Image 1: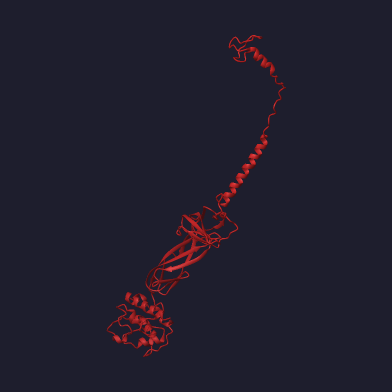
Image 2: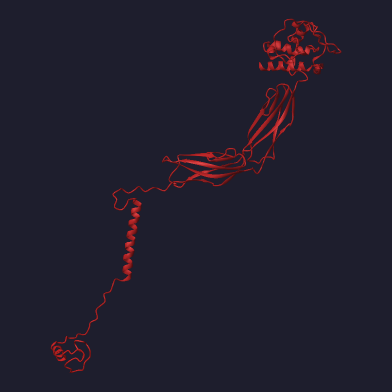
Length: 398
């Protein structure tokens, strides 16, 4: 047994502890008086089981979904938690525009059709304005692009929406040279004609155009209308000189081809308008019987000594260029006489009885050459120029 005081083991029946001297009997007695507690078999305490993992996971998922929904609602409302401000209006996606086809190509002279499209198909633009970054390369109107010269341009479409806003779209268009290049030729290639004469020019394309290529427009121009005029391919000589006639054909494929021809206008070797074709009816002041035509024509030599200056309409028409100011005041009959007076100086006779009678009355006139035998080469340059001027004034009065 053990000592109650020091706890050391002592022999059974000892009255005192040999270690501490404590009285053992009293301890024993006291020990005996104390009823030993009733020993009951131990019961194993039941362990409390916690919630199952599946249930915990379900609860966590439900809580997470609730939090996420709350955050989403808060973001969409634009409202700070705890704020009394009304939720912000949800903005619709921005409307964009595009052009179709994109990054396209067109030949010089040809056309390309572009169209616009809105991202919101429920909307329709009020208007569309088109613009080219370089009209010398390509032009655009109502979405139709026409190639002008090789190069690259930006085509912009500005769309006005019903909301009052405007949006733009761009696309690149490359202009290339046409696969078929036409050339234009004119026949005749060189024109010579007399004053008052006319001739027609013909045009030809090379190579021969395809069935779908036609000449939509033909423009004729003269760089000197005082010498030669042109209308629908018909040239008319107006006065002595030179001019250049140019024709431009605009084809249905947009190409424009040009050709030019030089024109030389010379004076008529004989009067462009013979006295016999003039219908002037005014009678001359004097009439005398016509002289008989000589069997052997001999040109008369004009001389200023023959007759006085008052016997001539234009006394110096064979030696000096007559001014327009001198010609314009003359009557139609006087202009006719002045023009034929130049021929009469060289002895030409006239089929028109009025003209013949008039010149027969002049002291300087010696008519010996029949009209069809007269050689206009005897006229000098001054006389030819004066004839042209008189004809020009006469033509202006018609």
